[in-house]
Image (cartoon, rainbow, N blue to C red; front, side):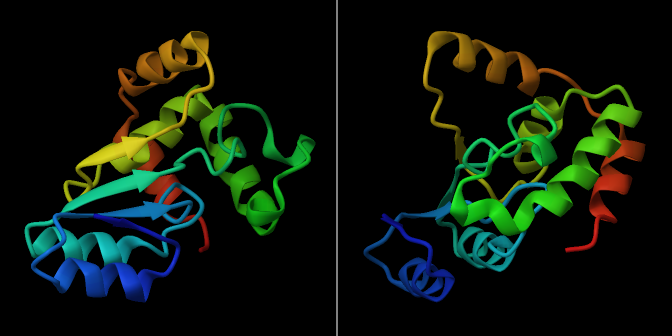
Length: 146
């Protein structure tokens, strides 16, 4: 497999017979969907797709992202993350449930990697994955300008 930020290289790897999987990183979550074409392309070729860092280096882990000092790689996502946080709060949906539920909706993703730093984080993530997010909330999230 191959894991890289270059979507063009991921698509090329997916088209190559020697690769079974590709790994996207930071680019498929409720506020950034630029890896969507990689996911569609690779999965249509029967390749596994791993989605890394759906929490956007902690930006989407639960608290109001506008109150955090974001990692430089995701600083440009704070405004969109704030809108998604507001949608989650207005609908009584935990932000972590919305964040983890987002890639689970995509049948082209084989595995999502969260990088839990502790047993407590792992347990919180697993619990969030079990929360069903209403379709009306997904419709609102999908309308967030990207």
